[in-house]
Image 1 (cartoon, rainbow, N blue to C red):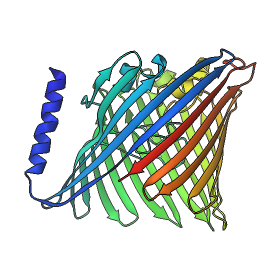
Image 2 (spheres, rainbow, N blue to C red; image 1 turned 135 degrees about the horizontal axis):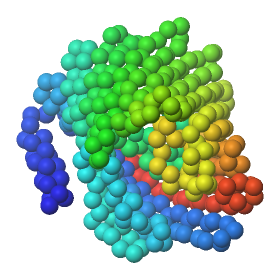
Image 3 (cartoon, one colour; image 1 turned 45 degrees about the horizontal axis):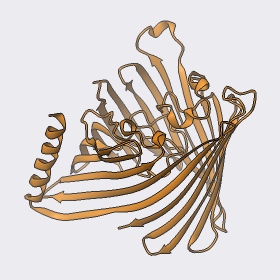
Length: 382
């Protein structure tokens, strides 16, 4: 019954937009095929997966100041039973359930989901957005304490659009470099996240401050900055979380990240970033698998308190780009190394190889564990 209602609502919206006078229509997206393998030691376990991933983005410029945008993901997942979990693939935590499985078996799952579906109104200094959207308040590259609406994982490289949330967002532009925002979002369980943001520029630096409530459980105060020193970019952000219940006798959770990035004359890009999150220890027992499996939030961004990241990337030829990255999870005594190579076969067709390696010391919570992940992807964009 619920699924029929959702599909019916989407169908009615589609007919409405198709019958409305338009100034412009936009369609873009991609389709990719990606086999992968995971090997865990010392257990000697191996899992495999083959993913066909299609995305289509639609944009309609309606008459006047109105615009409608939609983004839909279609995925066909085959492989080991642990890698084709229908419940995980079909999970939608938004206020509206816009995800459904059209195939579900022991070794196969097919899923369609809308992660963007929003109406935008723009006039003069105002911009209003209603619906499923990405509210991106983060400034740093890997860990974003200011992204209280929709946090993402650095390791999920095959989802560049990142998740959205069901929200209302109002932005007022004071000038070309200053704006104020109000955003209100609700999850499936009816938990509301609401916050204010103010952004401004001064002396070649962009600043922002945020204040609000996350999931009706914490008061949030935070801020961020981005600046440039002769080509050296310096970014940082922080958030402080204080539980609404037992406000006076509970500890404050602090989440803060800071990073540098620099582009050399030979096109070599180097990035460094550090995260401190004093609630990371809450997931220490999850160990290395927790980096993928643990639900992320701006309050809990890692499996330990101190985390360090470094990455170097460079185009080796006009068609081939390579990147090498690494992380060290200090308290967890664990590390990560990543290697990626992207080759442009022809226009709009790219071939990629990605390798990820996680390892922990014998004295860590995970024990002497290592996990290898390998991915090969062919992607056509349109």
